[in-house]
Length: 385
Ligand code: 5PR
Image 1 (cartoon, protein in one colour):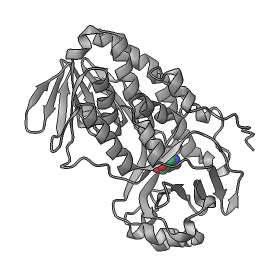
Image 2 (cartoon, rainbow, N blue to C red):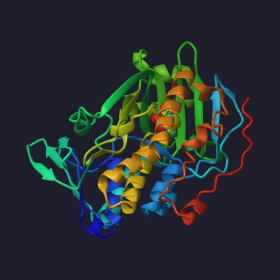
Image 3 (cartoon, helix red, strand yellow):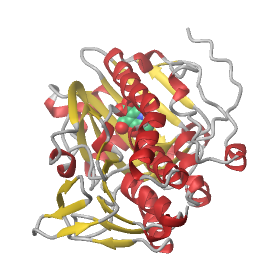
Image 4 (cartoon, protein in one colour):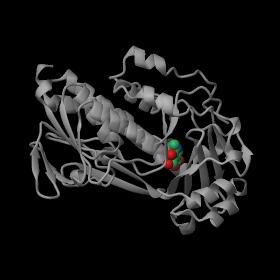
Protein backbone atom coordinates (compact mmCIF):
# COMPACT_ATOMS: atom_id res chain seq x y z
CA UNK A 1 0.00 0.00 0.00
CA UNK A 2 1.84 3.01 -1.24
CA UNK A 3 0.14 5.60 0.95
CA UNK A 4 0.70 3.77 4.23
CA UNK A 5 4.29 4.95 4.66
CA UNK A 6 3.28 8.55 5.20
CA UNK A 7 0.40 7.90 7.57
CA UNK A 8 0.47 9.10 11.16
CA UNK A 9 -1.33 7.63 14.18
CA UNK A 10 -1.79 9.24 17.59
CA UNK A 11 -2.64 6.77 20.34
CA UNK A 12 -4.13 7.58 23.75
CA UNK A 13 -2.92 5.10 26.37
CA UNK A 14 0.25 3.02 26.73
CA UNK A 15 -1.46 -0.07 28.12
CA UNK A 16 -1.44 -3.47 26.48
CA UNK A 17 -3.85 -2.52 23.67
CA UNK A 18 -2.19 0.83 22.94
CA UNK A 19 1.34 -0.54 22.84
CA UNK A 20 0.32 -3.54 20.74
CA UNK A 21 -1.48 -1.32 18.24
CA UNK A 22 1.52 1.04 18.17
CA UNK A 23 3.99 -1.76 17.42
CA UNK A 24 1.72 -3.35 14.80
CA UNK A 25 1.15 -0.03 12.99
CA UNK A 26 4.81 1.02 13.15
CA UNK A 27 5.87 -2.34 11.71
CA UNK A 28 3.60 -1.74 8.71
CA UNK A 29 5.03 1.70 8.00
CA UNK A 30 2.96 4.10 10.09
CA UNK A 31 4.58 6.83 12.10
CA UNK A 32 3.17 6.43 15.62
CA UNK A 33 3.07 8.39 18.85
CA UNK A 34 1.62 7.07 22.11
CA UNK A 35 0.39 9.34 24.91
CA UNK A 36 0.53 8.01 28.48
CA UNK A 37 -1.13 10.05 31.21
CA UNK A 38 1.11 8.70 33.99
CA UNK A 39 4.61 9.97 34.57
CA UNK A 40 6.19 6.58 33.89
CA UNK A 41 5.57 3.72 31.49
CA UNK A 42 4.46 0.85 33.65
CA UNK A 43 1.60 -1.49 34.17
CA UNK A 44 -0.22 -1.65 37.43
CA UNK A 45 -1.10 -5.10 38.40
CA UNK A 46 -0.19 -8.62 38.93
CA UNK A 47 -0.16 -11.45 36.41
CA UNK A 48 -1.82 -12.47 33.22
CA UNK A 49 -2.58 -15.64 31.31
CA UNK A 50 -1.91 -15.26 27.60
CA UNK A 51 -4.07 -17.72 25.72
CA UNK A 52 -3.38 -18.86 22.17
CA UNK A 53 -5.17 -15.88 20.61
CA UNK A 54 -2.97 -13.42 22.51
CA UNK A 55 0.18 -15.39 21.72
CA UNK A 56 -0.69 -15.29 18.01
CA UNK A 57 -1.14 -11.52 18.21
CA UNK A 58 2.22 -11.18 19.97
CA UNK A 59 3.77 -13.53 17.40
CA UNK A 60 2.62 -11.27 14.55
CA UNK A 61 4.32 -8.25 16.17
CA UNK A 62 7.49 -10.19 16.93
CA UNK A 63 7.39 -10.21 20.74
CA UNK A 64 6.13 -13.75 21.39
CA UNK A 65 9.63 -15.29 21.52
CA UNK A 66 10.40 -13.15 24.57
CA UNK A 67 7.11 -14.13 26.22
CA UNK A 68 7.91 -17.79 25.62
CA UNK A 69 11.39 -17.29 27.10
CA UNK A 70 10.38 -15.22 30.12
CA UNK A 71 6.93 -16.61 30.92
CA UNK A 72 5.89 -20.11 31.94
CA UNK A 73 3.48 -22.66 30.53
CA UNK A 74 1.15 -23.90 33.28
CA UNK A 75 1.08 -27.68 32.99
CA UNK A 76 -2.65 -27.78 33.64
CA UNK A 77 -5.65 -25.87 34.93
CA UNK A 78 -6.79 -27.54 38.14
CA UNK A 79 -10.03 -26.64 39.90
CA UNK A 80 -11.30 -27.50 43.36
CA UNK A 81 -14.59 -26.70 45.05
CA UNK A 82 -14.73 -26.80 48.87
CA UNK A 83 -11.47 -28.77 48.85
CA UNK A 84 -12.71 -31.39 46.38
CA UNK A 85 -10.47 -31.52 43.30
CA UNK A 86 -11.74 -32.12 39.76
CA UNK A 87 -9.68 -33.66 36.96
CA UNK A 88 -7.19 -31.05 35.74
CA UNK A 89 -7.92 -29.55 32.30
CA UNK A 90 -6.00 -27.98 29.43
CA UNK A 91 -2.87 -30.14 29.67
CA UNK A 92 -0.70 -29.34 26.65
CA UNK A 93 -2.62 -26.17 25.80
CA UNK A 94 -0.35 -23.45 24.36
CA UNK A 95 -0.77 -20.67 26.93
CA UNK A 96 1.75 -18.69 28.92
CA UNK A 97 1.60 -17.04 32.34
CA UNK A 98 3.69 -13.96 32.96
CA UNK A 99 3.66 -10.96 35.29
CA UNK A 100 1.97 -7.86 33.92
CA UNK A 101 4.96 -5.59 34.60
CA UNK A 102 7.15 -7.99 32.55
CA UNK A 103 4.70 -8.15 29.63
CA UNK A 104 4.44 -4.38 29.70
CA UNK A 105 8.23 -3.93 29.71
CA UNK A 106 8.56 -6.31 26.76
CA UNK A 107 5.97 -4.31 24.80
CA UNK A 108 7.68 -1.00 25.65
CA UNK A 109 11.01 -2.37 24.39
CA UNK A 110 9.39 -3.57 21.17
CA UNK A 111 7.61 -0.24 20.66
CA UNK A 112 10.89 1.65 20.98
CA UNK A 113 12.58 -0.79 18.61
CA UNK A 114 9.81 -0.26 16.06
CA UNK A 115 10.38 3.50 16.21
CA UNK A 116 7.25 4.41 18.19
CA UNK A 117 7.42 7.71 20.06
CA UNK A 118 6.29 7.29 23.68
CA UNK A 119 5.26 10.41 25.59
CA UNK A 120 4.52 10.37 29.35
CA UNK A 121 2.56 12.97 31.37
CA UNK A 122 0.36 13.41 28.32
CA UNK A 123 -3.32 12.96 29.08
CA UNK A 124 -5.76 12.71 26.18
CA UNK A 125 -9.25 13.94 26.98
CA UNK A 126 -11.12 13.96 23.67
CA UNK A 127 -10.97 13.32 19.95
CA UNK A 128 -12.69 14.61 16.84
CA UNK A 129 -13.84 12.48 13.89
CA UNK A 130 -11.80 14.59 11.45
CA UNK A 131 -8.73 13.03 13.12
CA UNK A 132 -7.79 15.27 16.05
CA UNK A 133 -6.58 14.16 19.47
CA UNK A 134 -7.16 16.71 22.23
CA UNK A 135 -4.88 16.76 25.26
CA UNK A 136 -5.73 18.00 28.74
CA UNK A 137 -3.64 21.15 28.29
CA UNK A 138 -5.68 22.05 25.20
CA UNK A 139 -3.13 20.89 22.61
CA UNK A 140 -4.81 19.60 19.45
CA UNK A 141 -2.92 17.09 17.32
CA UNK A 142 -4.02 16.15 13.81
CA UNK A 143 -3.49 12.57 12.61
CA UNK A 144 -4.66 10.18 9.91
CA UNK A 145 -5.94 7.91 12.67
CA UNK A 146 -6.58 8.51 16.38
CA UNK A 147 -6.71 5.41 18.59
CA UNK A 148 -8.47 5.51 21.96
CA UNK A 149 -6.69 2.85 24.00
CA UNK A 150 -7.33 4.61 27.28
CA UNK A 151 -9.10 1.80 29.08
CA UNK A 152 -12.54 0.94 30.41
CA UNK A 153 -13.11 4.51 31.62
CA UNK A 154 -11.89 6.00 28.31
CA UNK A 155 -12.15 9.79 28.31
CA UNK A 156 -11.57 9.86 24.56
CA UNK A 157 -14.49 7.48 23.95
CA UNK A 158 -16.70 9.41 26.35
CA UNK A 159 -16.11 12.54 24.29
CA UNK A 160 -17.92 10.90 21.33
CA UNK A 161 -21.65 10.56 21.97
CA UNK A 162 -22.15 8.76 18.64
CA UNK A 163 -20.38 5.74 20.15
CA UNK A 164 -23.25 4.14 22.08
CA UNK A 165 -22.36 2.41 25.34
CA UNK A 166 -24.23 -0.39 27.05
CA UNK A 167 -22.77 -0.87 30.53
CA UNK A 168 -23.44 -3.61 32.99
CA UNK A 169 -22.01 -4.26 36.44
CA UNK A 170 -21.84 -7.67 38.10
CA UNK A 171 -21.82 -8.78 41.72
CA UNK A 172 -18.20 -9.97 41.82
CA UNK A 173 -14.91 -8.20 42.06
CA UNK A 174 -11.31 -9.38 42.18
CA UNK A 175 -8.22 -8.36 44.17
CA UNK A 176 -5.13 -9.09 42.10
CA UNK A 177 -1.71 -9.31 43.71
CA UNK A 178 1.72 -10.61 42.89
CA UNK A 179 3.49 -12.39 45.74
CA UNK A 180 6.99 -13.82 46.21
CA UNK A 181 6.91 -17.59 45.97
CA UNK A 182 7.55 -19.39 49.28
CA UNK A 183 9.48 -22.66 49.35
CA UNK A 184 6.42 -24.79 50.17
CA UNK A 185 4.67 -23.59 46.99
CA UNK A 186 7.49 -24.64 44.69
CA UNK A 187 7.54 -27.84 42.70
CA UNK A 188 5.52 -29.55 40.04
CA UNK A 189 2.16 -29.66 41.80
CA UNK A 190 2.20 -25.84 41.97
CA UNK A 191 3.48 -25.10 38.45
CA UNK A 192 -0.03 -24.69 37.15
CA UNK A 193 -3.19 -22.68 37.40
CA UNK A 194 -5.15 -23.75 40.47
CA UNK A 195 -8.64 -22.38 40.89
CA UNK A 196 -9.74 -22.76 44.53
CA UNK A 197 -13.48 -22.12 44.95
CA UNK A 198 -15.80 -21.91 47.92
CA UNK A 199 -19.40 -20.84 47.41
CA UNK A 200 -20.85 -20.83 50.94
CA UNK A 201 -21.92 -18.68 52.63
CA UNK A 202 -20.88 -16.46 49.73
CA UNK A 203 -18.49 -16.90 46.80
CA UNK A 204 -14.81 -16.51 47.61
CA UNK A 205 -12.20 -17.89 45.31
CA UNK A 206 -8.43 -17.84 44.97
CA UNK A 207 -7.02 -18.26 41.51
CA UNK A 208 -3.39 -19.33 41.98
CA UNK A 209 -1.23 -18.89 38.88
CA UNK A 210 2.47 -19.65 38.65
CA UNK A 211 4.34 -16.85 36.91
CA UNK A 212 7.77 -18.44 37.28
CA UNK A 213 10.05 -19.75 40.00
CA UNK A 214 9.94 -16.55 42.07
CA UNK A 215 6.41 -15.21 41.87
CA UNK A 216 2.78 -16.24 42.10
CA UNK A 217 -0.15 -14.29 40.72
CA UNK A 218 -3.21 -14.44 42.96
CA UNK A 219 -6.67 -13.45 41.75
CA UNK A 220 -8.81 -13.23 44.88
CA UNK A 221 -12.46 -13.00 43.94
CA UNK A 222 -15.36 -12.12 46.21
CA UNK A 223 -18.76 -10.52 45.92
CA UNK A 224 -18.40 -6.75 46.19
CA UNK A 225 -20.86 -6.66 49.11
CA UNK A 226 -18.32 -8.71 51.08
CA UNK A 227 -16.38 -5.57 51.89
CA UNK A 228 -13.58 -7.09 53.96
CA UNK A 229 -12.80 -9.54 51.12
CA UNK A 230 -12.90 -6.76 48.50
CA UNK A 231 -10.16 -4.69 50.03
CA UNK A 232 -6.56 -3.87 49.16
CA UNK A 233 -4.39 -4.52 51.11
CA UNK A 234 -5.79 -8.04 51.49
CA UNK A 235 -7.36 -8.83 54.87
CA UNK A 236 -5.43 -11.99 55.80
CA UNK A 237 -7.92 -13.18 58.45
CA UNK A 238 -10.95 -13.17 56.19
CA UNK A 239 -9.15 -15.04 53.42
CA UNK A 240 -7.26 -17.53 55.63
CA UNK A 241 -10.47 -18.49 57.43
CA UNK A 242 -11.84 -19.70 54.09
CA UNK A 243 -8.57 -21.07 52.65
CA UNK A 244 -6.49 -22.23 55.64
CA UNK A 245 -4.08 -24.32 53.53
CA UNK A 246 -3.09 -21.15 51.60
CA UNK A 247 -2.44 -19.11 54.76
CA UNK A 248 1.24 -18.57 53.89
CA UNK A 249 0.59 -17.04 50.48
CA UNK A 250 -2.36 -15.07 51.86
CA UNK A 251 -0.02 -13.52 54.46
CA UNK A 252 2.33 -12.55 51.64
CA UNK A 253 -0.62 -11.16 49.66
CA UNK A 254 -1.52 -8.96 52.64
CA UNK A 255 2.01 -7.50 52.60
CA UNK A 256 2.19 -7.12 48.82
CA UNK A 257 2.43 -3.72 47.20
CA UNK A 258 0.91 -2.78 43.88
CA UNK A 259 -2.23 -4.89 44.17
CA UNK A 260 -5.56 -3.63 42.95
CA UNK A 261 -9.26 -4.39 43.19
CA UNK A 262 -11.61 -4.22 40.22
CA UNK A 263 -15.34 -4.84 40.04
CA UNK A 264 -16.55 -7.03 37.19
CA UNK A 265 -18.14 -4.97 34.43
CA UNK A 266 -19.04 -5.10 30.78
CA UNK A 267 -19.28 -2.23 28.35
CA UNK A 268 -20.52 -3.01 24.87
CA UNK A 269 -19.82 -0.10 22.53
CA UNK A 270 -21.18 0.27 19.03
CA UNK A 271 -19.80 1.26 16.63
CA UNK A 272 -16.08 1.14 17.43
CA UNK A 273 -15.16 4.15 15.35
CA UNK A 274 -16.29 7.67 14.52
CA UNK A 275 -14.59 8.97 11.40
CA UNK A 276 -10.87 8.73 12.06
CA UNK A 277 -11.23 7.94 15.76
CA UNK A 278 -11.16 4.25 16.67
CA UNK A 279 -11.49 2.42 19.98
CA UNK A 280 -9.15 -0.48 20.71
CA UNK A 281 -9.04 -2.51 23.94
CA UNK A 282 -11.11 -2.01 27.10
CA UNK A 283 -12.41 1.32 25.78
CA UNK A 284 -14.28 -0.72 23.14
CA UNK A 285 -15.17 -3.91 24.95
CA UNK A 286 -14.50 -4.03 28.71
CA UNK A 287 -15.48 -7.49 29.89
CA UNK A 288 -15.60 -9.67 33.00
CA UNK A 289 -12.25 -11.37 33.64
CA UNK A 290 -13.86 -14.79 34.09
CA UNK A 291 -12.16 -16.24 30.99
CA UNK A 292 -8.95 -14.25 31.35
CA UNK A 293 -9.59 -12.62 27.96
CA UNK A 294 -9.97 -8.88 28.62
CA UNK A 295 -6.46 -7.75 27.66
CA UNK A 296 -6.02 -10.52 25.10
CA UNK A 297 -9.02 -9.57 22.98
CA UNK A 298 -7.71 -5.99 23.00
CA UNK A 299 -4.29 -7.10 21.74
CA UNK A 300 -5.87 -9.35 19.10
CA UNK A 301 -8.07 -6.54 17.81
CA UNK A 302 -5.10 -4.14 17.79
CA UNK A 303 -3.05 -6.48 15.58
CA UNK A 304 -6.01 -7.18 13.32
CA UNK A 305 -6.61 -3.45 12.91
CA UNK A 306 -3.06 -2.83 11.67
CA UNK A 307 -3.43 -5.81 9.35
CA UNK A 308 -6.71 -4.66 7.80
CA UNK A 309 -5.14 -1.24 7.21
CA UNK A 310 -2.59 -2.94 4.95
CA UNK A 311 -5.44 -4.46 2.95
CA UNK A 312 -7.43 -1.29 2.17
CA UNK A 313 -6.11 2.15 1.27
CA UNK A 314 -9.34 3.81 2.25
CA UNK A 315 -9.59 4.30 6.02
CA UNK A 316 -13.39 4.11 6.23
CA UNK A 317 -13.38 0.86 4.30
CA UNK A 318 -10.62 -0.56 6.49
CA UNK A 319 -12.34 0.39 9.77
CA UNK A 320 -15.64 -1.07 8.61
CA UNK A 321 -13.95 -4.29 7.46
CA UNK A 322 -12.11 -4.58 10.77
CA UNK A 323 -15.22 -4.18 12.90
CA UNK A 324 -17.11 -6.60 10.68
CA UNK A 325 -14.34 -9.18 11.12
CA UNK A 326 -13.76 -8.77 14.89
CA UNK A 327 -17.22 -7.92 16.19
CA UNK A 328 -18.71 -11.41 16.50
CA UNK A 329 -15.71 -12.85 18.37
CA UNK A 330 -15.57 -9.82 20.67
CA UNK A 331 -19.31 -9.78 21.46
CA UNK A 332 -19.16 -13.51 22.16
CA UNK A 333 -16.17 -13.10 24.50
CA UNK A 334 -18.01 -10.41 26.45
CA UNK A 335 -21.24 -12.40 26.66
CA UNK A 336 -19.55 -15.68 27.53
CA UNK A 337 -17.30 -14.24 30.23
CA UNK A 338 -20.33 -12.53 31.80
CA UNK A 339 -22.25 -15.81 31.68
CA UNK A 340 -19.33 -17.70 33.29
CA UNK A 341 -19.13 -15.04 36.00
CA UNK A 342 -22.86 -14.95 36.72
CA UNK A 343 -23.35 -18.71 36.78
CA UNK A 344 -19.95 -19.46 38.39
CA UNK A 345 -19.73 -22.32 35.93
CA UNK A 346 -15.96 -22.65 36.36
CA UNK A 347 -16.43 -23.64 40.03
CA UNK A 348 -17.73 -27.04 38.96
CA UNK A 349 -14.51 -27.88 37.08
CA UNK A 350 -14.02 -28.96 33.51
CA UNK A 351 -15.60 -25.75 32.29
CA UNK A 352 -13.28 -25.21 29.32
CA UNK A 353 -15.49 -26.84 26.75
CA UNK A 354 -14.74 -26.34 23.03
CA UNK A 355 -17.40 -23.61 22.91
CA UNK A 356 -15.87 -21.77 25.87
CA UNK A 357 -12.42 -22.07 24.24
CA UNK A 358 -13.58 -20.33 21.05
CA UNK A 359 -12.12 -16.94 22.03
CA UNK A 360 -8.84 -18.48 23.21
CA UNK A 361 -8.53 -20.41 19.94
CA UNK A 362 -9.42 -17.48 17.67
CA UNK A 363 -7.20 -17.47 14.60
CA UNK A 364 -6.15 -14.01 13.53
CA UNK A 365 -6.34 -13.00 9.89
CA UNK A 366 -2.89 -11.46 10.47
CA UNK A 367 -1.40 -14.79 11.59
CA UNK A 368 0.54 -16.81 9.03
CA UNK A 369 0.67 -20.61 8.81
CA UNK A 370 4.11 -20.45 10.47
CA UNK A 371 2.62 -18.51 13.40
CA UNK A 372 -0.25 -20.98 13.73
CA UNK A 373 2.16 -23.90 13.67
CA UNK A 374 3.84 -22.65 16.87
CA UNK A 375 0.54 -22.93 18.78
CA UNK A 376 -1.14 -26.24 17.97
CA UNK A 377 -4.31 -26.85 19.94
CA UNK A 378 -4.10 -30.28 21.58
CA UNK A 379 -6.90 -32.71 20.91
CA UNK A 380 -8.28 -33.22 24.39
CA UNK A 381 -11.27 -35.16 25.49
CA UNK A 382 -13.55 -32.61 27.08
CA UNK A 383 -16.19 -34.79 28.64
CA UNK A 384 -17.83 -32.23 30.83
CA UNK A 385 -19.47 -33.77 33.88
N1 5PR B 1 -8.96 -15.99 34.70
C1 5PR B 1 -7.91 -15.21 34.84
C2 5PR B 1 -7.98 -14.11 35.71
O1 5PR B 1 -6.93 -13.31 35.86
C3 5PR B 1 -9.16 -13.86 36.45
C4 5PR B 1 -10.23 -14.69 36.22
C5 5PR B 1 -10.08 -15.76 35.36
C6 5PR B 1 -6.65 -15.48 34.11
C7 5PR B 1 -9.22 -12.77 37.44
O2 5PR B 1 -8.63 -11.63 37.06
O3 5PR B 1 -12.40 -15.33 36.79
O4 5PR B 1 -11.78 -13.46 37.56
C8 5PR B 1 -11.54 -14.47 36.90
